[in-house]
Amino acid sequence: MASAWISRLQTDAGLRENKQQDTALFLASQNKDNVPAAEKDDMTLAITEMLLEVGADPAAMNKHGGTALDYAKKHELPLTAARLQQALAAKAAAPPQRKIGDSQG
Image (tube, rainbow, N blue to C red):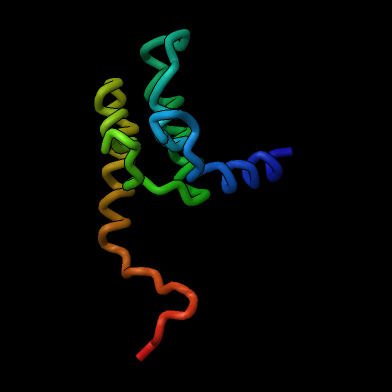
């Protein structure tokens, strides 16, 4: 059951879910009105970790130019914001990935 859910996350991690072109990382930071304030950041951090593990892009922007980090800050999720900042720094430090067909010369 868990492996099927992870497989689904891998497929959906980068999909644009709504008219604002938000990814799953954006949506993780939103819509937790019925969750006690003390639990929101822990819950969002856990979801964010799972999404990052399956390849969600922390640098993806929605149609308004916002990132998941922007949303985490807006929704006062400091643990999630710190993790997204870490993921963005790691992405910036990583060597560029070659595409199939790129020359190696």
